[in-house]
Image (cartoon, rainbow, N blue to C red; front, side, top):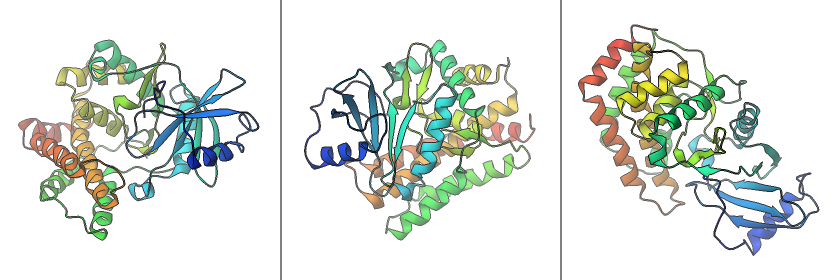
Length: 320
């Protein structure tokens, strides 16, 4: 989700009435006239800007997409993770969580979106690393995120819905098992993780890179976040080094830890590929999820076939 001022027309009709009625249960908004306007961004959810008639305060209300629980999403966990992220100065301030609908209301972040081009600039990489480190050093959150179990769950759910599992699954499963075995001797303490670090979820408020959309958050491997960010933005090897140096505040980074980041790029693409496969059985969005899954399968298998993958497996087994 990109929290930017919208150009769309205000929301009217049944949905506007439904949301306005629900917002009467939010103490900071109840009893006040408001308008709702769609915000851009978001694939599985819808977000609306709330403008109060009698104040300058602006908020965002987030509506879950259809059947998002099938993707392993818990709105209760998302709420708790957003509160925790706000507490370390990275996430948006939570104003209300409206039950039973699961509507999350946050304060609008005034800032600028972060483009793909900007992500690759050294200063932006350092600021992103700082925000990720703040998240991982924050308080524990409910929920557990184990990506190699997530992809297995996605496969089972997709099969239940009659989705054909791509032939690329076998190669991905083989690479994933090798990564899992290599990491057995290099365990890490679990940290609160975002697990969906796309630049579309970043807002530059002028002081810090703020991060929104915490629906996949959970306690997990912090290197999954780093690898997820790296592969989502196709960082170069030098950029990976810069990211990890800033994150760990150590120069140069330990080879085993850099190797772990690179292996998690493969795991991240596998999760993303299987997310696309499962979405084919949900089909609530006008997106070519077959092509989406194929793209991520292709990228992970290409990397797993490179000598760099074998070196990373050897290096991560050495520990840090």
